[in-house]
Structures are given as structure tokens and as C-alpha cells.
Length: 202
Image 1 (tube, one colour):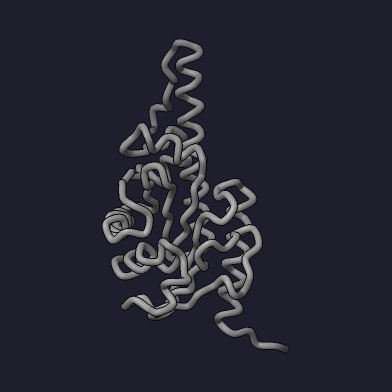
Image 2: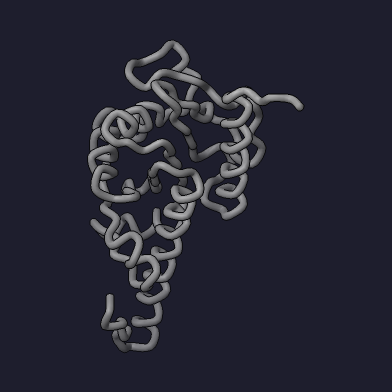
């Protein structure tokens, strides 16, 4: 039996979830990025790679505690991922551009899920601002993720992070689902001319 290396195992995991994110329409062309932490290193998707067809060479291994010469070929959001790992105990980061969340981010400062499932898990998701890949954005996103499962960057997308791959993916999906429900709720309120009836337990 062939024993796979940690690089091969992490690649398989990242390829699986990158494809899931792409199939959901949460990224376009070469957008989005994912990473997994193990020890003092993280494995992150390469800059401009396609999440629809992630190849082994699209995964870059870099240290968490310091910049690396490989940062230049890694995702443009590498500094954000690194800051998240430095400020939290999380082991996974996923960043995507789900359309309903991005659209709503222009109008809100916080997403409070209107659906019971989203509210039960997420409670609230803050919206922050910052240039993609910047130190400012890294600081704001990492700070938010010490208190929340996810954070929305205005006009840019969602960063979700936790200790488990599938849980992080679930959070990413729940943020977009709640954003879509909120969008549709607001549309129906406008069209029907009545306020939505919110369940009392929310």
C-alpha cells in the first residue's frame, strides 16, 4: 500500500473543496483561495490558479510565522491567511466571492441571518473594508475571525475559518444562503408592500 505524503493529502482535500466552491458559483475564473494549516506551515492555493481544476503545482507551502520567498507566487490574500493563523487557533481558511453576499455588502455593515438555521449558527457576520491582500485588510479580517466564524469584505467576498475543513465550507455556504434569503425577503417586502413575519425565536 502506498503511503501518501502530507502534501498529497492536503492537495486532495483542497482540490475537493475548491471544486465544490467553484461548482456553487462562489468564484469566477481564477478567483478565490483556500489554505490549510499544519504545524508552523500553511498550504495555500497559488495566485491566479483555477479552483475548478486545481493541480498539485497550484498548492504552495509557506511558513506562518514569517514572510517567504514563495509568497510572490502564492495567493494575493496570503497575508490575510497568515494573519488569521497567527491570531486564531483555526486550521482552515476559505475565501470566495459569492454573489448575493457581495451585492448585499454594499448596503449593510453586518449580516444578521433572517433564516433560523443561519441565525442559530452564525448569529451575525461583520462587514469590513480594505484593499485585497493588504495589511489593513489582514488585520481587520483576523480580528473579526477571533469572534465570528466568517467575515464579509465589502465588495470583495467572504473569509470563513475554523478548525475543520467541512465546517469551514459549511459556514461559507451558510453565509451566502442567508444573504440570498435576506435579498429575497427584501424583494418580496417591496413587491408585496408588507413587512416579513420574522419567527419569534430569532
